[in-house]
Length: 380
Ligand code: GAL
Image 1 (cartoon, rainbow, N blue to C red):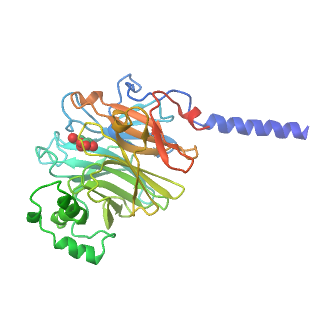
Image 2 (tube, rainbow, N blue to C red):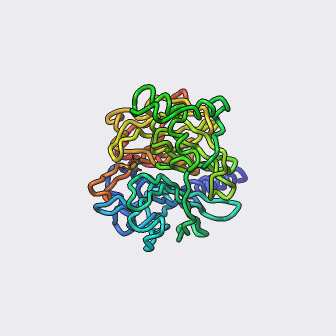
Image 3 (cartoon, rainbow, N blue to C red):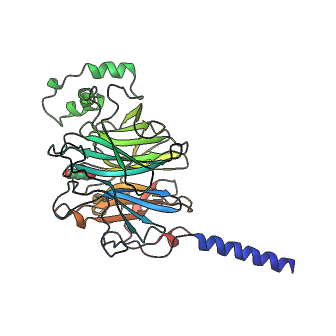
């Protein structure tokens, strides 16, 4: 009898755990239209996902039919299972005031939101370009909210760590950089120019004003420290910058990584103490081959690996560009690679590519294009 009772309770406990998993066999179909609860294609491009209070919140760029500029702002969608999404509206709205940095017609790209446990605030960083200035401003916008879905309050914008040298430059390297002169390199992309960029030719020119900050993501490490990763130096070099404890500013500690590597669209995850970063090359809205790097210290050194994509269209990242890597809560070693299939002639029709990150026997991540897969069967 006692054994029967034990069996019964074990079965009940197993059923409770099984039922508590939010994931189903509902398919994730990359490159298709993804309807929200009203049947409207999700409008959250260049996005990222925050898992908070057993719910996924997807923040992304609202896109219109003709323009890639911000006409609405940053949108938010919520989901329990990563397949059924509810439109939560505009999290950070563009402003009507033409003097505002986030006035309608500015560019607000690749928003990411993280939660600060100490302050209880949700903090958003995004790539900001000022209206009418193309991609020249190269700034980061910051906004906060007490509620995950918003409304977010715009705090202002910054460039990367003005007047501060990176932690991974020695005094000798700083001296060598300061000896470089732009006039000595009149032509871009010569081997000498690339070598000088590696040493900080472009870094030097933005040192006082702060480093450019375009494609970007945020990462919160296991110890609660958060990092802002962005394309600096005219997209030639990535910076990884630690944030202050409240996550609303750069702390002053940062590294210049993969100098002259020409990387955009950074997305990062950590597994077994190793940071893995997937990026793209720089060809605007057109897809190119992804790149992958790893490091055991977030400030580097970072080691390059071959393109993680395999199979057909691997050299075009399956027609996408990385935006975020989501660790799947409740599943071991489960990460979803998220990318955008941009459609610049009709940006609102941009599609999403979500794929499980697969691992080789030696632990190296790789990707395969699965036109249809589901979380329940992918990770038992
Ligand atoms: C891409 C970048 C996008 C957007 C676009 C504009 O390279 O990843 O976020 O900035 O360029 O052309």
